[in-house]
Image 1 (cartoon, rainbow, N blue to C red):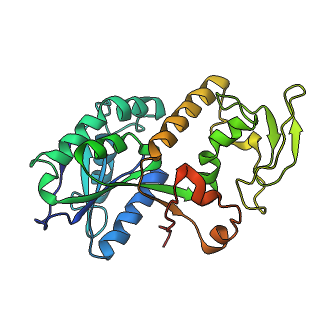
Image 2 (tube, one colour):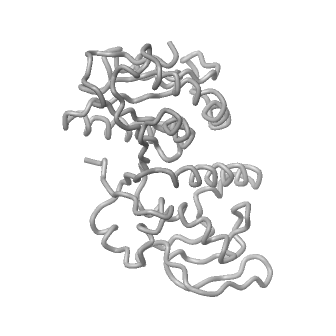
Image 3 (spheres, rainbow, N blue to C red):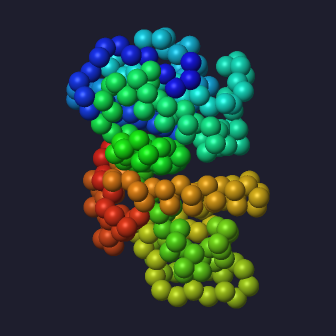
Length: 275
């Protein structure tokens, strides 16, 4: 049933953390690992996933849950799915995340039939599941972000305003000039456009350029759509109190530019879930 949790036992007030992953396998598996880490420290963790994901997880792992101490909750998505064929693609669930799932999650967080009686202390949302941020705000639940990839990829996406300001990408995310994101060198790709100044988004040992940005996939229409999604995602992420990222000491220590602390106008917390 939509927006209902599978409860095991009653809990004291404000003792539960609700985790909302982006509905893709790599994101869900790491959110489950984070939930397991919380449960191992005595925190009740409930992972809220779209109904089409919940059906597959329950079928594969049994109704008792995925891991000990972690519960699953099903969010009504309104997406047609028979649980037999491949799960819905990006186009299908992207609309559901914006127009259907927020109401379901809000019902889950505010009604006794949902999780209101569990004492929800915090909501952890995958940064790509930014649709959950306004819901948490309306419900008065503190929200923190979770970035399942490495810190370097977060820095790239957080630097979108700077990339536009320096004339490296257009307002639609299309590269205007190629430039490594850790040094001051560049090459022209469109006409005679020139940019000045250095760009230190990544540590020096990582050689990513503006020609390899994560939204540059398939064709121009798809790139524009994905870039719009990223812009909306990062704008909402500004309201997170902190952001948990998957990193390691050497990567964090390699940041001598303050990029990580400057991202989203605040210092995101760093923690690894790959334990």
